[in-house]
Length: 164
Image 1: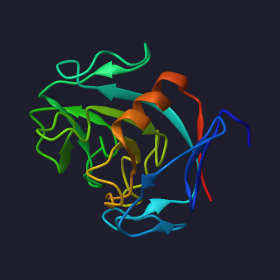
Image 2 (image 1 turned 90 degrees about the horizontal axis):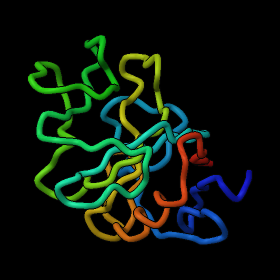
Image 3 (image 1 turned 180 degrees about the vertical axis):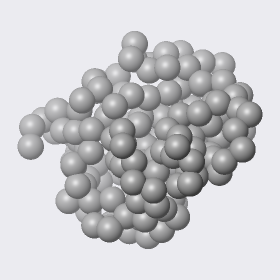
Image 4 (image 1 turned 45 degrees about the horizontal axis):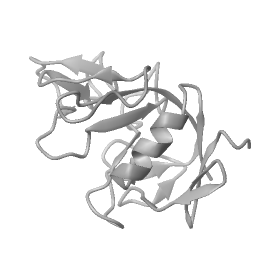
C-alpha cells in the first residue's frame, strides 16, 4: 500500500493519512460479487475515470467527463454493453447517471468487472455521494459530498481502491 491508495477499513476510507466515514453495500463485503447482491467486492480496484453533473458542480478534476440526460450505465448481463457507459435510447437494463437526486453529481468509476465484464459478476462499483451517513449502497462506496470532492481533487486515474 502507498499513501496514494484509498484503503477501505472498518473505520472508514483512508487516503493520504486521513480517514473518511463512508457507506458500503447493503450486502456487506464479498469475495464472490454477483449482479444484484448489493455487496461491495473485496480486492484491489483501480479508478479508471469519472463523471460529474456540469449543471450542478464545476469540473472538480480535468480527467472527469460531464454527464447529461442521455447518459446511462448498462447493468444488463445479456447485453454486449454490460457494465459500461451507454446512451439513451437503450433498451437493456440500466441505471441513469443523470439523476434527479444528487447521488451521482460526482462519480468515480472503478475497474470492477471491466473492461471485459463477465455477465452476472456485477456492474458499476462507483465512489459516489451518500444518501445519508450510514445508509447502505447497492455495492458502491459512498461518502459525504465534501469528502468525495476533496478526494477527487487529489486523485488521478490509476489510483487504487483496496477493499480488504
